[in-house]
Image (cartoon, rainbow over all chains, first blue to last red; front, side):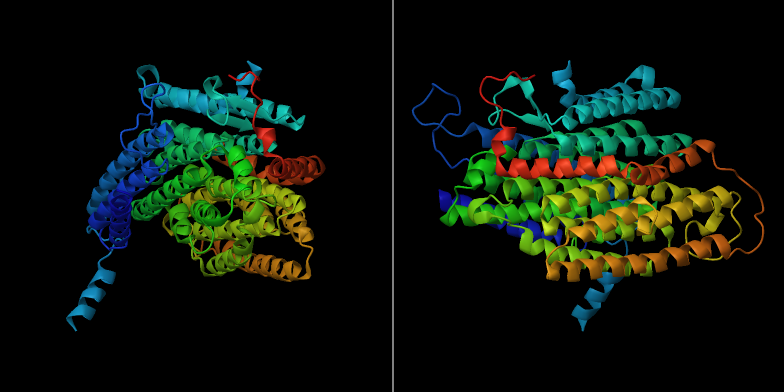
Length: 118
Length: 506
């Protein structure tokens, strides 16, 4: 289980970082979302992975650490709000600047395309 | 009542902000202005009370809901926190005074956002729990995201895309770091972390080291240290004036966090992880100063120039933190007070100048004479002299104090040359900009639109702090010295910040 879990976090983080480095706002927002998923999973595991463990005293023999669950809940709420804001901002930037490049101009992107065509 | 004081700097702005969204206040701008002033002045009064209590050496530990620390959340009002809160509120008062004149009409919800921002900043300074530090960072960031685009316009949107994206990545890194720290130490209370970090060794030590360095990265992004400073100049130079003035404290939130975490948790007493950031801070500080000074020389507008000088001041403070003695921390705190207030004044002044110059705005180019060139000129020369660090104002005093705390020959060589050369470059950039704006005038203005008096009052209110910082220099340096000593005492004995089992909290 640990291996699968670690792989999930790793793959999500990798994809997130790759996407945030892209030039257009949509992949960047996707990347931020993935990064926040990865972070939530990672935070959750910081209390160690326990199967069939309750977080409430007096209910089971085996306990899971409740604090990371509370932290993840906070992080999810904040991450969700931030993503919503990033989406709105991306749309606003598209409207204000006339394109969806993060630098506000297509120039950099055009240069890349030309390089590729050569 | 007195025991509840530490929570008030968070509660008052929040309540005021929420009130402003409700009918009797949400309908009229004048009522919002009035209640914002009431809120800011009330918080200012609380912060003065807090600093008086802290000055007697008491560390006010407020346990929310009376949950025992380190299991519950605590707020800590020691000298450092109280000082930062007072500084924030003085700056906020100046910014608000300027905002009242016009900038609140360019968009909706200026005052609620302003108040939420204050709530986040105050909370970040007060909290004694690193996860809460993250939460308050998010509160102040969310408010700042909205304030960056407040008023609208291409430049603001463009700056905001970078600012938001970078800070979202920063938040993700912060959470990764917190996860690592909790996984290794099993606690998120700063004092408790400091206790636990001493016993680490082997693989746990390495993990904590990774976590600690990620924290440095996050705080570095907030404080705009090299190479994470690229967002700053564009953001600060495009936002509206009161927002830019308030943002002067934002880089200091990063500096404060570095001082707090890397002195108390990863300081001299952290066992195998002692002085985790020390080796990194030196080159980063020098490079930050260098890049800021180069940027200052290349700046084409006054706001860009001020933004780059902010980067220089960040580097100067990092330099003092890198020296890592109580004396250098005290000097850094004095410089921090000066830099925050003067930067705030400078951003307000830049906006006032831009308003008087018509289409040229604050660009360094030939234009018609300013209508009110006399008060603006006096304000500019005062602010410029103070900001670059020429005698007789507070910038000079702050820099001298930082330079004096460098003791080792290598420290002296690096710190003195970097700070002094950067000052020289600042002088060149400022005098070039100032002489272009005030003296290279082509003809009289066509029509005169006077600045509202309240704007000038706001500028001079913040500017007056610079001579005051010199006149009361003795008392202030005494306070900052005691503050720095207290922080180093906390590093030595973190149990100071952990109340014993039977004390009563809130």
